[in-house]
Structures are given as C-alpha cells and as structure tokens.
Length: 351
Ligand SMILES: [Zn+2]
View: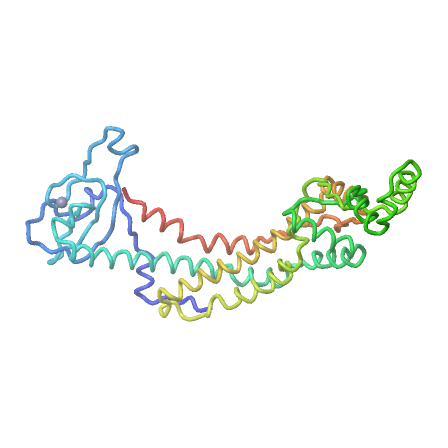
C-alpha cells in the first residue's frame, strides 16, 4: 500500500481547522474597513459557552466590523491581513457569493483531511482484518444444520412450515372427532339407514357413526419459537457464505492507488465497501445468534413438547462453546472506518 503523501496533503494533514479563543489569534487585525475582501478561511471556531443564550450568556466575540457573535471564521484578507468573520453576519458583511466560495474551499479541505486520516487508519488495520476474515471459522453452523436436517428432516420441515405461517409460533395439530363431518359422511353413504326412525334404527345409526369417524386437525399453539426465522432456510444465507462475500468486498475495498490520486468518489467507495462488508458480517453474526436462541434450553423444551404432540423428535446439539468468534482485527477496522465520521459530525455541529 502506497502511503506516501504529497507536500500538499502532508500540510493538509497537519492543519488545524478549529481554533479556540480567536480574539487572541496571533497577528489579528481587530477592525477592518468596509470593502476589504476575505480570500481564504484559515480556521473556524465556536466559542458558545455552555448553555448559550438560554443560560443567560451574551455573544462576546467581535467580528472585524464589531458585531458580537460566538461562532465564525478566522480569515485572511487581500493584502495578507487576518480578521474575524461572524458565522452569520459574514454573509451580510461580504456577500453570499464571496463567503460561499471561501467556505466551500475550507470545507473541502477539511473533508479531505478527514478522508485521508480515515484512509491511513484503515490501511493500518486492513491487512490484518483481511487475514482474520479469511481464517474466520464459521463452518460449525452448516455442520449443525446438516446434522439437524439429516436426523430430523421431516420434523424440521414441519417446524419450518408451522413457524412460517404463524410468524414464529409452535403450532401442533391435534386430531379431534369432527361430529358434523362424521354425520354428513354417514348420511351420504347410508341414506336409507339414516332416514329410518325408531329405536333399532337409532342404535344402528350410532353403531355406524362410531365405526366411521371423521377427524379434523385442531391447531394447538405451543408457544413461541425463538430464532424461528433461521428455520426458513430458503429465505436466509449462511454465515460461511456471508463471510466469503464480506471477504470478497473487503479485498477490493482499497485499490492501493497513491493517496494524491484519491478523490471524493474513491473515498466514498471505500466507505461503502466497508459498510457493505460489515453489513454481511453483522448478518452472519445474527444467524449465529439466532441459532443460539433456537437451541436455548427453554426453547428446545418447547420444541420438544411440540414434537411429541406431532409424534416427532427434534433436538439441536451445539458444539461446546458455540458462538460468533472474537474478531479483534475486524473490530479495529470497524473503528478505523469511523475515525473521520465522529470528527466530521463534531465539526458540522455549529449552533
Ligand atoms: Zn460582522
């Protein structure tokens, strides 16, 4: 990876964008005459005291025209003088277009600093993260699943069908005599018998009904099934597949181009790749968490009761200590990729 910085980017990295106590800035010209043109923003500041105006404070910083404010910019003027611009009054004092242009440049430079800081932080940890990801062993999930469907295929199919239609309930079906259907079937089969009345006929009818019962399936709700979405295999991926996809994305995230040639779209692509890769990993970790919930003792007890009701067997056995593996290198990458974000949010938060 090419981490050599141009002189320009090196200076940019060293640059401090936010300053404190701008009224004490070295070489500051306190008052500047109307008509002077600011050409560059050097810093911004936010001197809002805790609580601001609500807490009874009054703006105490003066711009180069003497207006009070708390946040604004330290700017360089034509001819090299340095003066303060008020965050709001500057647009009125110097015109929208002038301030928009120099503020745009200032923000672009600060963004680039954030992006380069993040890129350097990412490059520091990416190789280890890739190695960790390549060696991440999540195969136990598939092994558990294959064993399960191999041993309890019919039961897991029934279980999946039930939780799918009920959105997560364990539904067993109990056979109960359907009196009305039994009678209807009997009258259709033996119309003469059931037309007759009299004691002998009634006894014969009862005997016939007892011998030709019609049953119905009555659903019995046997409680919730934790982690049930896992059972619907067609609608989910597997940790091994997701980890492979994440590796593929992450291995292409940085094209090793020299930093001077990185532009906004490159930085955005890097950020997106890392987000996509972690979305895959979070999904994979979610599947492992679901399996743990599905296999928890309380949940297995409910499933076992359901299985007995359905005249089936079902039991999940997890390997000792089963869980999502520790991923220190990937965790480091995740926080490296958040490096600039926090600073950017902090800088953008101006009252
Ligand atoms: Zn002003």
